Length: 123
Image (cartoon, rainbow, N blue to C red; front, side, top):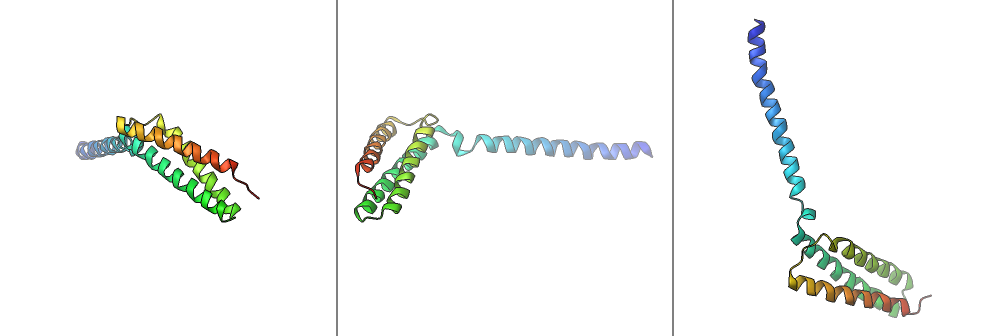
């Protein structure tokens, strides 16, 4: 009787081990397939961050012109943060030549707009 119980439990253990190994393999594959590990996706992410930073810098400039200093400072800080994030993830990106040219152009424009916000009067 003991042999029969062992024989029955071994296939069950084998199925459990295979299921665990399969789950581990799926989790590892999912980690490798995340967008953060794809250089092409990272280039698009950098471009989106730069566009967001440019928009936030424009909003900050408009807020300053309307004497909304607190709102302008929040928007300026968000534009600076977008610039820093873009620079941080640029090293992980693998942009095409067109994307690289666009990234360089937008980085330059964002830096200029942020520095122009420094020159505007605040309260």
